Length: 327
Image (cartoon, rainbow, N blue to C red; front, side):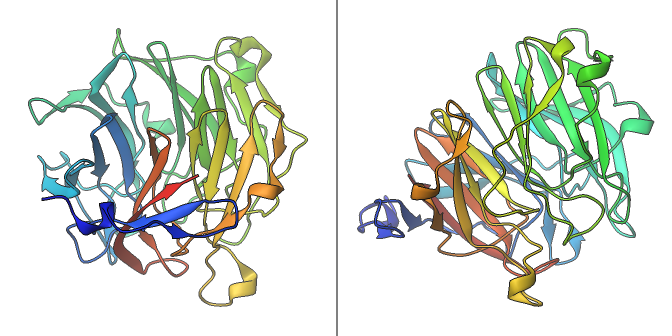
């Protein structure tokens, strides 16, 4: 039976017809610091994350048509802040390239895996070089190469500017041209998205929850020698711990943490929109999240943005709530 969330009217969040709808909650008491991916237009998958202060190995599949969750084969090891991506050329494959492990201090693991959606099985890949191990990196893929940008090596570690590349056919980590191998500045907990061959790293933080940034870094993955560019279009609201998703040529950014105006709660509710074609922020399309949060993960499917779980207070303190945003 289709859940009632699919037949109730959408809840308006602005005069511009942007809207939110509640969906069936994540099948845990709460979830944050996970990653969300879509292998096909009917499904999304969440990997890992945190339940309270504990790191989890849970993997869940959400059926969009049925508004239901199913538990899949767990991660080979528990991970929070995992780095993962779907290959467009093989969408039934998910590449999991490290992340942060359990307390104390959430040290990063270089272990990398491939998940096969049809067989519900995991297989070990070549680990990333130990010196590059990290979580909370931004990710993109072009042809058969996956890029990881920035991140942190542990919960208390310094923010990294490192950019790494994994070549799928050879199961190897490859060297990038110098101009592409480092971000213009270190970033972790950034929003990120890909539009065509362009990799966007938006906002984030550097060496501290409230050291939030408003930058937009752009890499054309067809011209690595040209390296990263910094847009002159700064975010209307500097934020870390935000999430982002591309809908057409626009990138929608949601929430985050490090909001000094919110005191101990520290969470942003902003929804801000970057126009990649015009290289500008569309302030006329700004809105707010119905449930402000950080430490979640957004995925765009058929023009809708799905956002499961997330932290509702700065640091640890999550929800199992799940909603979908319609621009």
